[in-house]
Image (cartoon, rainbow, N blue to C red; front, side, top):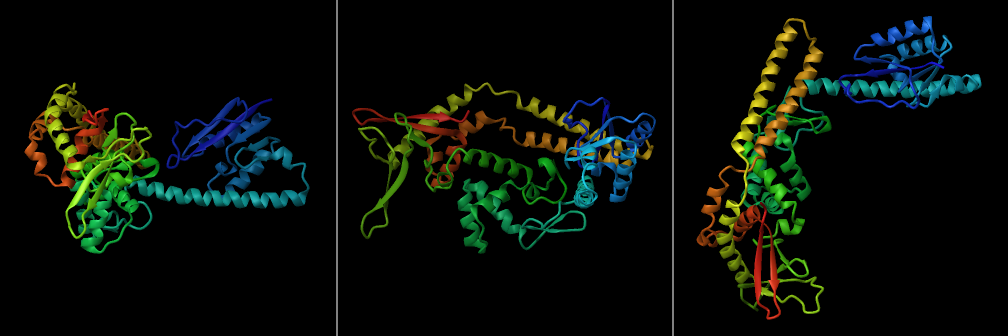
Length: 437
């Protein structure tokens, strides 16, 4: 028994490298990419030596229109071939045993599905062609932009609101704080989840995000520059270590201190005296499971000790790091980008010389641009090369004491992963600072 298969791949919608697993063993596969020349070869071969079974993913792959699909289906079945379409659960030998009325009803339903499938594919093809032209995806433009003819255009009335939101987040590293600031300053109410979407949205960085999370850079005017974008990404990664409440808490030690014995977090509480504005802050381990509960500690005393220890221990920790040559890594990425950009220029010449058709060149160009975007992202995510100089600058106690609580929170989380607090039997406490590197 001879079994053949036919596979049609639309280069706008699928990758040729994606293998398809057939439900049964196949003797030969006819595969088309964009055109249907192999389908014509299949029909010609079947007229000389018809196989017993022809496998299809979908009957819709037999043509671009419902009329083409219907004609080719009849032509192949007239040769006595048993056609099985896996996605439609269609098998011509089984259908032939049904009554004429049943066949008529089921064929009508099947062709309706095929027509719907082809309409969806045409819509996807339109989106794919726009993607190759680097046009914005369908839908409303993000807040701060409006749709232009071929790209997003900065909306001068709303873009300053978005820019101020980003600057506030970069300054203090607090998402909820930036959301509250936006409502207080501009009367613009957004949820924290919307604010996080703004921070992660590539459109504000001058990029477009397409299918399968593919990003093309420098497609329109950015509201957030590259350096600020890298800072936002770093802050988001850093804040992901904390709960949503701790990440935006106003106190600098919020979310950092854990009990070394029970590993439960210390939370910050405040009390005030009657008719007095002064607050008294203290650290307390609410969930401590030990019989001898962790005692409450004065917040300012612990904060002062953290500052003294970070000034002493941070420079030593940085010196102990075996940091790779970041300049060499950056140069390697930049060389790859330059090579791909040169290839992009060659594609234009190949089209001019009729060596490549425009559609193939557009597909290759799109792939190269996504690869360039990925390399640029890697460059922006590299850590600072002057970490030792930064450590020296922040090793002065006065630097920390002069900061506000929000500013201290920002810098603590840049260097400290967590702080372990140990209280011995004599109720004497010590701190162990664990740095992020």
